[in-house]
Each structure stands twice: as structure tokens, then as C-alpha cells.
Image (cartoon, rainbow, N blue to C red):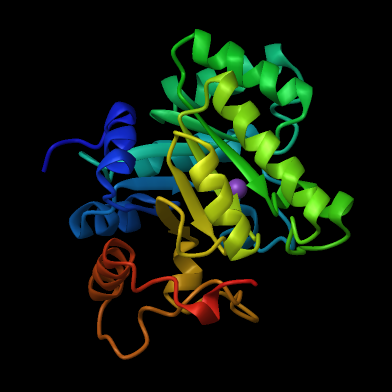
Length: 266
Ligand code: KIV
Ligand code: NA
């Protein structure tokens, strides 16, 4: 298959071809994503929870992210590789540039993901894009803000908060972000933001109207310790291999069968 590139994502949105994103943290699983035709592999700082066993993403360091990004990169050939900026790596523009440079040059990422849209984040997005490092923005239930939110809570339920998030989405696009992850928001807001921006949106608990979907690998294999999030689905249930589970996820995102109403928030 032809490599998935940053410019090709915009074309996918324009053509209405849904974008399939999935997390990976090591080379073995990265190869499974590659073989299943996943468009984007995300080395998420969710690795703090599903790999390291922490209860949040906050303990993840830049070194952890660079390491996992580099081992995922070895399993990929045509899949676009996106790496998360860990907590506080984006606290100011110089740190953001240094962190992103490591994720790209040592880790092999083609794009970095940053949570939020506060002024210093918009500045960081602009500075990275100016230096030819593509950026994926991330709004809604951004896990690095867990203490501010008082838990992992759905965001944008109130009209004012929803309007604010639409403005944030337009701001990250104006700053140069090429992709936007929307996490844990009502379906109607996911649809509204997807229409309000020209960059592709990737939903996780953001409804079926986003331009693509992302899940945490362990969640969609049904092996996350404890309770599986409502927005996820166990694709290994009733199937006899990881390869078939990932292939089913790819198929269901492309056809729009996933997410179903039970995975969404009203
Ligand atoms: O860390 C992660 O896996 C993420 C996705 C859930 C979007 O940021
Ligand atoms: Na993340």
C-alpha cells in the first residue's frame, strides 16, 4: 500500500474516507496494525496506564515516549506514526521544540500530538509547524488535565463549554494543526466541530460524525484491567486472533459501523 502521509489525511476528509487510528506501544503490535491497514499508529501517553500500570498519564516522561515511539517505528512501513507529547513537555515553546525534535529524530514520529488550546499550546503548535513538524491537536477529555477536571469526565456538555471548544478547534487549526483528536464529548459537539474545521477530526468517545476514530489497543482487545470505557468495544470477543480483531476494527471504522450509539454520549 502507498504510505499514509500528513497531506493525504486532508484528502481522506475531502473524499469522505474514514481515517483509522489505533494506539501501539511496541514493534510486535505495530506490525499487526501495519498488516491490518490501520492508517495512523499513535504512541499514546496512555502507555502510562496500559503499559506501566499507573492510574493516569501524568507519570510518563519524554524518555519513555521516545523509547516506545522508536520501537513502534520498527514495526511500521506505510502507517503514519504519531507520538504524544507527554505531560509538561509542552510547558513552553523551547521545551516543546526540544521534545518534538526528539520524538521525530530519535523516535521516528512523523507528527506529534499536543493536548489543549491554551495560549502557550497555540504558540507551540505554530512554532512546531513553522519548523516542519506536523501537529495533531487534542481537545475535550484531555487526560493530562485529569486533576483540573476532577476525574475522567465527559467535556463540553454545557452550551458555553461546547461553544468554547468549537472556538478552540478553530484556533488549533489556525495555528497550523493538521489533525484533531476529539475525546469524550457529546455526539452533537463532535459533529459540530468536524463541520467547523477543514482538518480531519479523529474521535474517541466523540460520536460517529468525526472523520476518523481512534481507540486504545488494550481496550479494543478487551484486556484493559478493570472496566472498559463506554466508548470502546472489545473487537477480540468472538474472534480467534489479534489480527482478526484489528481487521474488524479497521472495517467497522471504515464502514461507519463503529462507533454505535452505545459507544457515544448524548
Ligand atoms: O494516549 C492516548 O492513547 C491518546 C488517545 C486515547 C487519543 O491520546
Ligand atoms: Na494521550
